[in-house]
Length: 144
Length: 388
Image (tube, rainbow over the protein chains, first blue to last red):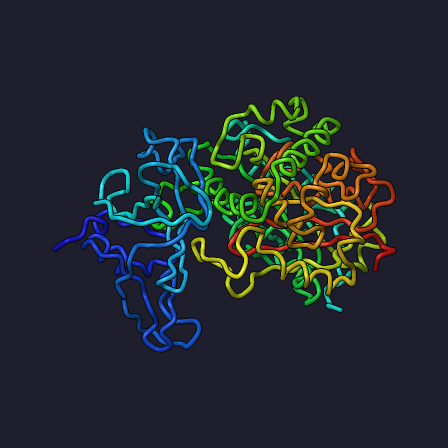
């Protein structure tokens, strides 16, 4: 099977998160855990800076966490013009307690009631589309 | 004490006018040449004798292109400091290293930008290095990414909106007296500020730096050589660059702290290396890609903590001549103009010389900070001869 994101590859930064996108496109949130010291390593990297291992296990994680911060984008920025019609939209940074409080981003879905730092959120996975630059994407909903 | 302390000084400054981004009639390289030749004239140095060139981020006016037009006799040292605007102050450390080790004698530190608006942020500022984790989730601009940090600064750490406004009011107040300032005629009141459009919450329009075309340059020489030169030297007391464990390219995973500028350890090093502390600083040019990030810088530098930010950041406290900490006395990145922060160094130097249009009387210790929230940053303290 060929993955959508692989055909629309965004280059730059660390480039060690292919397994993240692959499993997300398969419908599963998975995060890297060092095979040596079992520490969660995020963003994904090529070597564990704590123990020196080069091996990571990609572990399925429940998409549940807390809002760490957020911004409501009120302007259609150059490189994310695919979302022009969605402005204003809210992007969250979410901490995942199950995975050592690593932080993932994602756009808020549904009702904004209760949006605040510390709010509980639950994630779901959107299929690749133009808006997500043909990558799969986590979307977060506020839990009442 | 660091061997760098007071070993070098800035003896020349040069700046082109600020143009609205994408509207400079001159190409980037010519702007760089203008800034460098002006700095040489200001210093009383033959521009052909400049033998070191240092810039940062994605500067494209490299020495190889400048040399033929400057008549450079010999380029003996050339370096680009990594990352983005965070590198600003670190350029002086590289210059000091080159001079102290005998690699170069007269070093030009400069930055030039002139680009069409759609290329600027992507290529010149972000260096096309924004990761998929951001772009997939609708985040592109540094404004949006820094907004995440500032939302937390305000909502979680309790820094009030009034503190952000005070930096805007002080910047535009200072810009009025500066004929070079792009925002010198912009009226600023609390009402105008509050009514401006939102960019990416919590930022309103005036919380953001301007984007300009332009160039600026400062010339660095040894303290020994500086003594006999035309201008009052601004000595480099300390200019550390770097980041701590838990910082770097971590895609919103900075720990243990997140909402400030990532300059706490840098500032501690600077105070240690210079032998001074926040209470000694007379005037500060605080890099404000976004003003809340600059407030984070001031927290990291120990000027105040989160709880004190509202009381400290008032218009009266932030303006020259007699505020508690006059900041951005040329108008700074918000109101003078923004060429990746490079305008801050000449103004920090003018304060030591006593020639700022918003002079702090008798200023001896003049701070300027590198890009806050950058993946790696820097900060610098300049001093007059009697601070050595």
